[in-house]
Image (cartoon, rainbow, N blue to C red; front, side, top):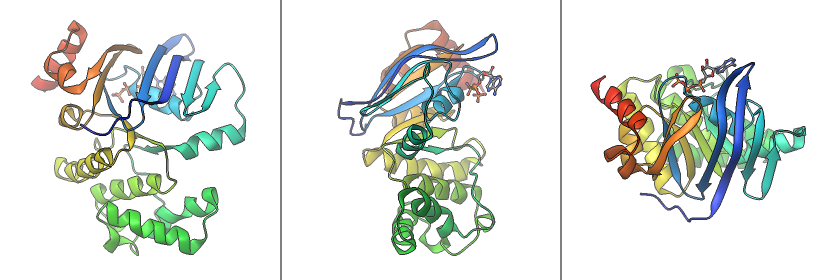
Length: 254
Ligand SMILES: Nc1ncnc2c1ncn2[C@@H]1O[C@H](COP(=O)(O)OP(=O)(O)OP(=O)(O)O)[C@@H](O)[C@H]1O
């Protein structure tokens, strides 16, 4: 259990996304409190990644609104570059593939956006980067290139890079799916620490242990809709909907 304050930080209202006639997100309503950790689980193709990508406008939604703190973006209206960069700055994202710059040192990977986006000096950015690398247990890798690091280390660097812009919320899209289980555990430990520090997190995951033991809230998606959402222990141990029960049984039998 983490430190959710009860104050809504993120609100989605009737958020929809279609590709042609294929409705991938069907009028999603969702509220996430400051400090809450929400795990999104569900079958393949149910719209989990699309939902995350719509929240930070990597995919423009087809309809609905996204509110983050005091700012509301309406999908029906054009979004300016200023609004988009403000949104992306406030919403950090970590992907399944780490997307680090291979030709830059680990330190530079973490510090570059701080200079470009936040206008920090190189010295300030490097100092902050070293703090964050230490937080993810990688201060000794600062001078290396990412290619010399393991997958788990690269994902922890990607987390440090996202944190470097001081986001209000962190989105994780299956951050351990590309990793061997042991390396995944390193990443999950960093995510647990982040959750306990009070970061607001939305995590698409196949890690049922994370959903049950770290997240405050679990949400099950199927066919672009929210099937069930509630306190994680309740949803994972006593699901109310047949669709959730079927999904959890299938995961369990895998
Ligand atoms: N760019 C795109 N163009 C067309 N269809 C897309 C696009 N992106 C996603 N889709 C479709 O949207 C649906 C939802 O995909 P999404 O990746 O959000 O599901 P998911 O629940 O995250 O699945 P998984 O667990 O397999 O990652 C799928 O049917 C997918 O084929």
